[in-house]
Structure formats: C-alpha cells, structure tokens
Figure (cartoon, rainbow, N blue to C red):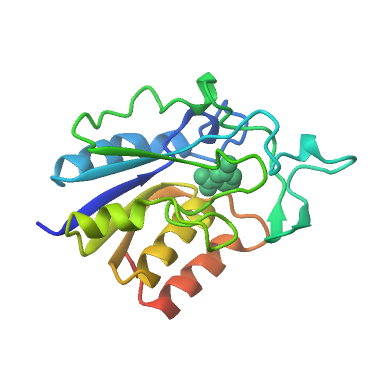
Length: 199
Ligand code: VGL
Ligand code: ZN
C-alpha cells in the first residue's frame, strides 16, 4: 500500500447527530475511521468550509426550502441548511477523530458562488481543488475513501479520483448516507459502472 492514500471525507460535527446537516449515524463511523487510518501510512482529510453567505445555503435564496434543487450557472445544485461555516464549532472535526498522522487537510466549498462536493473539483466539475495534482506529485496511484456523506461528498470524490486515473476503493461501513430519493442506491450503481470498488 506504498502508493495508496487514505482519504477521509468531511468527518465534521455538522454532519453528525446534533449538527446542522446531520447524517444518520454519522458519528458511529469515527472509531472505525480511526482504526482504518492506523493501517495507512498516508492519510488526507477534507473539511467542508463555507462562508456564512454561501450560495449552497437555502437561507441565501428567497423562499427556498432546504433540500430543494435550483439551477446555478454551473448546473443543478441542491440547497442545504446552513452548515460547516468557517470558524464555527460545526465545521470542526468530530472530537473523537484521532488521526494525528494525517499529512494534509484540504478545505473545500470556500468560494461563495460555488459548492464543492468533491475533494478534487468544485461543482462546475472544472475548477480543481489542487488535491489531484498533490496526490500525483507525491506518486500516489490508489485512493481509499471513507467519511460523510456516502452519496454526496464521498461519491463525487471517488468518481473524480477514478476519472483522474487513480485506483479507487470506498469502504462503505465507514460511511453514512444522506439518502434523499434513492441517492445511496444511485451511488452504488454509479460506482459499479465506473469500476470503483465498494467493500
Ligand atoms: C456534503 C452536502 C453539502 C457532504 C457537504 O459532505 O457530503 N453534503 N455539503
Ligand atoms: Zn457543504
């Protein structure tokens, strides 16, 4: 596993029970993530990191409900409750997360006008976060993903990693899904079609 990196997606308070965009059981995966991380020499964390007026927040759109869909200049966008606001407690990593050997924390979603589910590209599918270049420059060829949420940030990060040429594995037991309208099943189908290994 010399050439593999363990990528932990958004293990943050706001995606855990009690948080502003809580994912069912989001906190349950933290001990497993800690354990799996000890088996990997190289670990990278991502952190959803939004300004308070972020355009993905329903609160920024007149009469819009959280979890509704709108059309943005870059394509369709789900509107979310306010979450992971820069500097807030909700944006901090879960207090039980214990991955001191993580080598990089990559923040995403910090531009007001565009969301970023993927750790590699923002939601226009064009603007790079820099993570792809970083991993390639360091010689990694394989990415193992875990974290939150399975059907959003884990999904799009895994798909972009695969499109960039990495071997990609997602450990489903160390993820939890938002699962709105069949999005978890759609994620499994998409992974199978793309050759992303789901274990
Ligand atoms: C996420 C929705 C909005 C995620 C982040 O981490 O899956 N989902 N922001
Ligand atoms: Zn977000």
